[in-house]
Image (tube, rainbow, N blue to C red; front, side):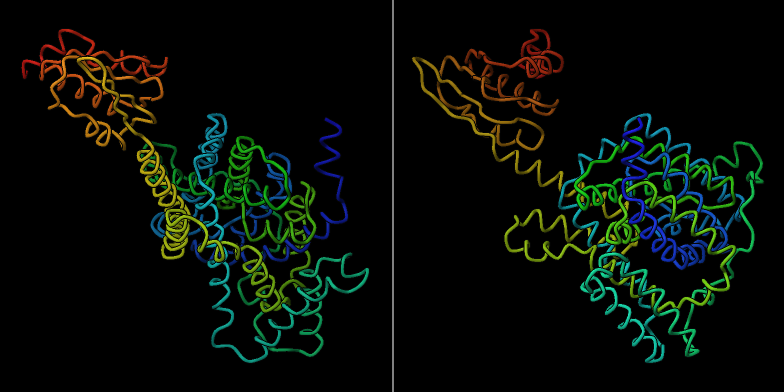
Length: 494
């Protein structure tokens, strides 16, 4: 217990504090922007980001991962807020948290093993593109000063680490934000700042129970939104955890993460915040800036609240160009450039899954839809590939023939399985050897029944041998060729 506490909280104090500070600064414009997307006051997103980050630092299953208000969740809230208002959003966020806790206890985090690497790569690339696209409004119809400041920020981010000693001591994104803010304030540069995005809160959040009627009608209103928020939130959190696992060469506890996200969203809703989830952009900023432990997430949440409440005059002066530079760095670092090179070497099916995931996520801005489509395509390609590996070999014997089935027989390979038998061949005895085969589903058992019945109609006796225990179980349960009454019905055409 003590060793775990020390490792997760106090093994990287300086790096976690500095990276958490960078993340807190990057969270401010994001939280405000996501609040605007959802159609609520900026305070809702800022309070949510503070609350979720602090709670998840204690309860999350992935040290170093940042959770807060996110764009993917905000997009699902628009209609609810427009039609029913903030109070119903708070209620939906609370119910969303309950669903996520239930998912954790049901161990649904383990479903991530069904998400292929090509889907994860597509998800990562799509998020990188969306992060970059989100910065474009800050770079259109602006003066040349904004481009100069953004370019200067990128220069600082990428060149500062090469400075001896100090380059490794301080995270370059933090240096970028501080340097550009100081420069803009010193010369009085007239460019867009954080303060221009919306009014920052001037007080601490307070306990706020959603003011909605506790009846079935309210439940029916918020239920579809809560389910959608829970699914998208967990999906984005699980995918982000996978990415951070790869970046840090560590593992995460996905079921604990589900529960932690649920508690965090309940806490957020009770403090006047909206639901959120893990953020790939801020998580990458945290990792790239040296953050590894839970302290970095805790610092990000606490510093965010301190800055927006007590240092709002200073924070409001941060040029958006500085934060745009940081987010462009994140999009460049997030995108899997290797996947472009691998298009030449990877199978076409893998490339199609990756590109389809990217295209759907970017087109719809719906992460869940893109990932579901990617998983569906990957499953179809896998089923098709496995279906082709099944073969049926023939071996003539005295007055008969033996068919040796090799491979996996399931819904995708049953047509090939049936076509492999010659029912018009004049033989008195047929042996179907399943020693090297495995039957998986009802469709495959139905195909076996079809083959046996057809041979019997042609006057041949049929023996099915070599079934393993799993195949024998499914055949005994669902097959009819070995049940005289049912087989007679089929043979007689009834």
